[in-house]
Image (cartoon, rainbow, N blue to C red; front, side, top):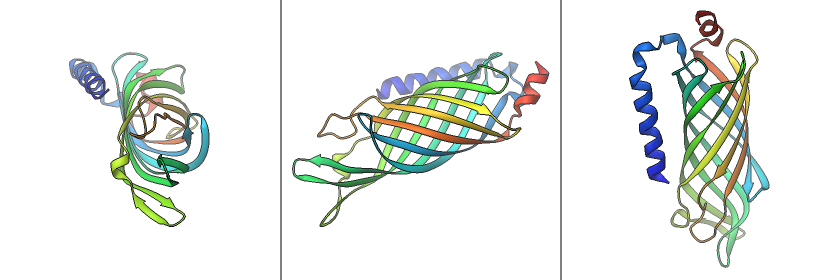
Length: 199
């Protein structure tokens, strides 16, 4: 999976470099993203958390861009079993990098999909008797993501994202992570309306 992620990143970098001379600065977009995530194990949704980060996209064709995003959040997975006889409320820090193509599907709407790499840190299990560091029981994981967003003003878009984990969340049990995120996107640069008027 790591090889697939690196291959995709290299491909995106190669494409954007090869077409850089034909891209005007206004076709680059960047800004901040805020998200409310509903997530759980095997479609068993439980907790909600808030995350945020930054995004960047670079247009490579009339309706096609390469999209990249980095997000951070603090996740709580409710009552879970880490290993036999050990269960409780699992929390962890989460850093996610998204990369993939983004398509314009209208004057104010975008659809993107691709690969996300999730990095976990500060893993902790809160039991009835205290807290336990379970960093050794957890592992980073990869996901596929599908993202739809609609621009509601000159600088703000609203979106919905679905993320599906590709490999196990824990080493000891085979579970996949499903996430639905509702996002607010704030554009700092690359006004979409200006781009349309120049084409």
